[in-house]
Length: 214
Length: 127
Image (cartoon, rainbow over all chains, first blue to last red; front, side, top):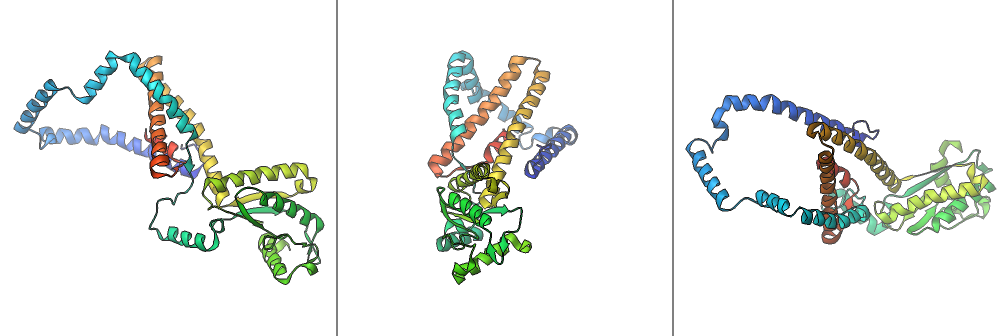
């Protein structure tokens, strides 16, 4: 993970690496020293007479009824073919579920009382869910696309082809841009035919998108 | 251009159109020489999430191969046996698969939500 180019994975990798290294260092140095200094008191409160009582009780319990791990291991040794068969039978659907199960991309899911989540819920209710995180399609033309305040025919055609094709996709509510200031297509190659409000929206969109190149 | 989806940005129904838009842009650029000259980029909340997910999954796949190979070598050196090392790797793989399948079943059927796409990676690290 440390050699990954992705910062998130890199940080987990470095953190884990240091974690294992420090745990190993502590296990090999600090813990033995502490045990040596503490002596039998390390088992407090189950030390001395209390330990002997506990040991007798544990041995008796073990003799009467073996523990779960012993029984599980005993069963596996007695019926190896059955255990192997069961493993394969369970693994097939498990692999299928792992490969086809639905995953989520919403990191805020479950934050029911977070202010940000409440705010998004209100915004979604008022303006629609898609309004919160719109998708932007940036088109960079090789030459200027405005002549005398009008969009060039090539720019109009290209932007409209894209807008129309994207607008036809499923789950797309609306596509806005220089040729569709309010979602409906307009002829931006002749601004005189465009309604004043649409013209204002076009220049707003164009100003935002193309900025200083205009 | 701004594209607004019907659903919120982080749902599967909003990520699928992003893939479609990218594919569509590629097709249109190939078909239309005029569009082919333009530089077209798709960005935004859904796109960032999709790229983040793709990048994580892509790097996770590389990590899986490297980690499994490294663990196999360690087990081989420690245990000195190919069958034991392979059984060790298989049992770890089974634990992760079963745990992830159980998590998916629980989330999809009991909580009625999806498991975060990063969970397989976390399970792999923990187990």
